[in-house]
Image (cartoon, rainbow, N blue to C red; front, side, top):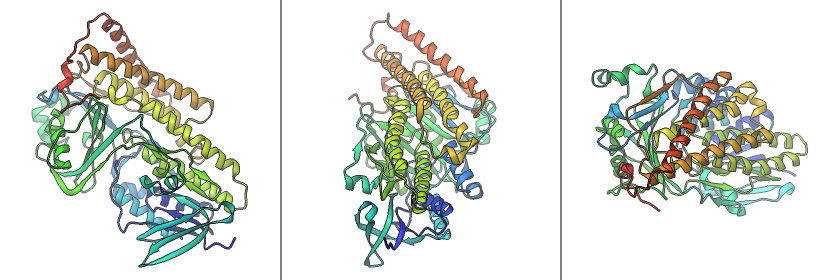
Length: 513
């Protein structure tokens, strides 16, 4: 086939640019065109990287220098729990690390990161149409694909062997081909904004007012992804280079309703201020006008992610939940795999087995990831004992299964989608089991009126997670906490049901389904 290009990538943000970079690295003579619809990138729901996506960006894409100079180093996850709006700040429960993170992760401004990635792709030899709107895409398998786009006030047509869908939530090919499905089991919405004037977590003032809080932690709380948690919702607080702070709420519509207000930014701010930790940090903060966003029904997936002549990467394949920041992990695995697949195809190899594996394993990866980590998690999210047990077990499992393998041999491991093989299925089964048990325990606690009863008076700062045998310490700690909750549950079986649990009023205007 006489093509204008070997590959046309629709979407020039992280996933599309990363696919282009890896493709040019694997096959430098490949003719690659990137079509990006926007003149400037907007900001995404989440701005944190995980250990796996950071490994991909530093060890594979070579972004260590850029990330170190233009983004912020992240210091793990930190969770905050409370029982009531007027609870003293130093009585709230804090769960997080005491020391610096062992493995590099970052707080990124996605608009800046996406722009940098696209610049690298162009420097590597990719052509770019921007801004350009794709108005038609015909897929004909081995006969070749045709893409029509409106750019520079005129329509252009390009033929190619492969089309890569990197359109994010637009999911262009999944919609076109009828493969897009909403994940109705996980009805979550998100509202987020940028704030100025947010109080620093580590200033001298803390030592005067809350000396125990200030002296217990050896790392900077400011650079962590801080989470405020309640039943049915969580709020992220993420610092950005330049001084602004990203904050947003994700909530399960079956359990929680965002407070009313004149604008989304004011409603978000009001909810944050209803939390004692949020009030301490955001008391003098201001919403940056014009930088407030919202999305409803966040999770979705595509039943098919490739065929001969096309493949989807990143958010064009699926999205689950911003909690634990898995989005860039999915971008990393899919962009690396698809770039390798297309490079082998352009070299004249038969890639039928690779296409079959991607189509079969990706839905399994999505399903297991969702059921292991997120399904009904919002029911126990506001209970410090249950959620801290989940944090220890979730992150330890992630380190054992994915982080350790990624750093051991990244080039090989990014070709294997998570939860592959017998080991992956066993890990998913164990994680789904303890997640289901924690959901059941939370519902029992809520019914008995003791949900979140221990959301006060303690602080747990652990040494941190490492991808070796020392992770067993966190696993054992998480198991003990879970089993302790099971023992408490046995006692609750003999307690009469209380119709109005004490913490029903702790969240701002909660609504039962």
